[in-house]
Image (tube, rainbow, N blue to C red; front, side, top):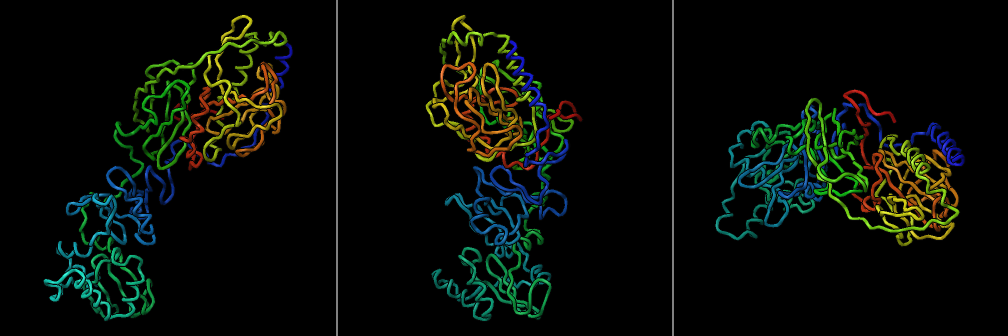
Length: 528
């Protein structure tokens, strides 16, 4: 016991040293809204506030089962070509559309893609030509008599001939990639003194004859047809009213759990679908830290392999509003094995020794020292075969001592390097009685990886290591029957199955915008 005490005293002394902060995700005060840029990512797309009339609101552009406007927006050229959104989705003449500054996109289910809507034709049909001519110097829609009764190829030739009146506008028209798709056919030409304009089915090309703030004399520019249609009142008011992203949705849509039936040992991702400030998440009464990403708050909850199954309480608060849901935790079947400990190691079967060491490690892995440090998915710390899986129920002989294997063992030779599974800061390095030479990496956000039984160390306390960097060498120190890599992973103080993190569902949280510590009350965060 004297050796245990000495090791733990040394370990506690090392763990108490101040650790340099290395988090790249900034911590923000509780109550700060999620997403404070002009635009920010959302699930399946982007939220834009640039056209929200300084209200802090704006319009989402996303892909979902109904339409893929986000993909179309990017394929057409994004902001430079399409402009910022000026509406939500809405129905126009039987089609689902979304208006942008420079064009209106129309979803076409028959081709599972978008068409650029004939915005200027629709404005004519809706009776807006007087307004366009008087207030925005757009020529009135004109029907060409020679179009009657001829094939489309001839109609196309008739309308393209309208461009001959102005070579500069003609050149600008044909310089547009996929000009017919983007602009439609020319419709009418008008001379307004200081400016001449060509109206097409989907756009307006203007050539200014004098210098103006937005164009030099002789330059051809494109009027924002989407803005013109919105200003003329073509779109319903409810479609153009900016959405405040900080207003939480209804209770049924507020919380998304990433697994319909999580099992013992799983790490569970929770998304709170709001950018509002003052959000808290509690799992069976325990508060969880949060990160902001995609215009929403995210938490990751850990469950041990021995966690009680059945309904678990997930409580989310947004300000004074509280939503409780029940998450069913399913039982997972784990293998069992029997191990015979050599006579020289029988003293390591003492439960008091095991308990003291476990409590010390929990003082480390229960901390939340800032936001995520990791980048991308986690990787295996060894290419060797798995010799003992996570959650294995073990019987240690002599004495029939029952234990649970909280990590994964990989076969590896003594002295083989152990690569860091991801970026992290060394939270502990030193000898322990049962676990032998040990390294603990803090990946931020309450996520830790631990390596036991090392032959030697390759890192120092407080050091930030990148994914793939060597943390130590394979050994067989402590309560071990042979050289191997033992890898454990803790999330929120619970030893979880590390394989889930290799599969990548939480890698995107490494790109979070901001971090908020867990809230033990309405005003006091958990100390890091």
